[in-house]
Image 1: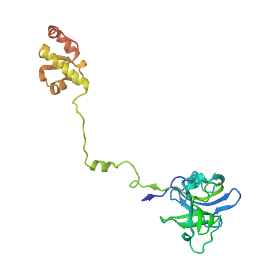
Image 2: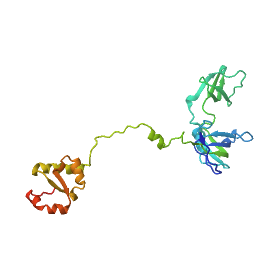
Image 3: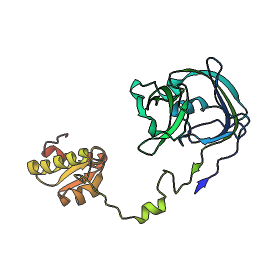
Image 4: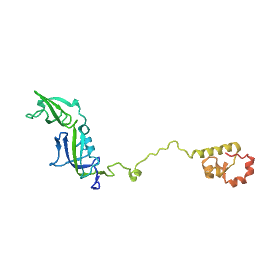
Length: 254
């Protein structure tokens, strides 16, 4: 389901916009090549293939009520003229009775079933030389565009458009959490515990560890380090009160 865009009198044409317009194209000599004046206006959605990408580029940014005249080149709007697109075709490929004369633009179906137009260049016996390039390709063009209405592209709904997954969906779906190389503590704490264990090996138990030099404290030493009651965390004041014990063990700062 699409959400209708908010109406805006100054909505500018963008990708996916739908617009209604009048279009006139004149050759440099003034010859009228195409016009919707006096006819039903052209209604299209940018990107639907009605106009070439080059022509759509002329419409971008225009707003309803705007009318412009500009000079463009057919190569930019319909692609460059390709000499390989000029062919000799049997006259029998065209509808019976169709007039064939140089300068005529004829429409016919390709073997793939697509309708295309071609410019007749020559007629020799039962052969017709046709230029299958777009008739306006390779020509400088005078173009007039009048925008009658603009409808911005429809906004996708939350269900259709990309967006974050609702928290309820995320929590209800099974999840696998992988932890690479888990550790009990940070590297600094691991190193401190290693030092305490090494001190016990060198000097025997108990080892009194000043709390300010080993912030994890008594619980971490007794429960996590594996040395149990062999290491005791004490405050700086308590460490000073045990000075005789420390001096006999040659107190070392680590």
